[in-house]
Picture 1 (cartoon, helix red, strand yellow):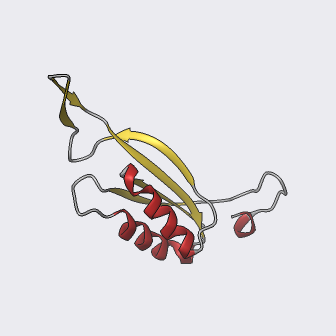
Picture 2 (cartoon, rainbow, N blue to C red):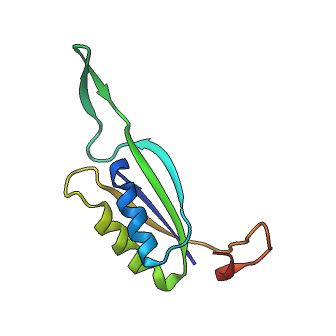
Length: 112
């Protein structure tokens, strides 16, 4: 099993969610996050005053999938989240040792 984490632009969340659902991904965790990468934030003007926005609002999408689904899930997220502009985000793939469903005690793939 693998955990796929994607940091994406907030307005792309619905597209990513729909694409993952169509792929057969049954569950996901969504978290509102802030950060910056190469773009290093930006400046905005509010009521005539210019100020620096250092941390850009993003959304983190987390899904746990079987190892054989990883490439399809990554491609799906990449396609749905791509706007072609800087700050589209990152995708991380991490190993998952065990998954346990709290309600039933099921383990492994059955618990996903």
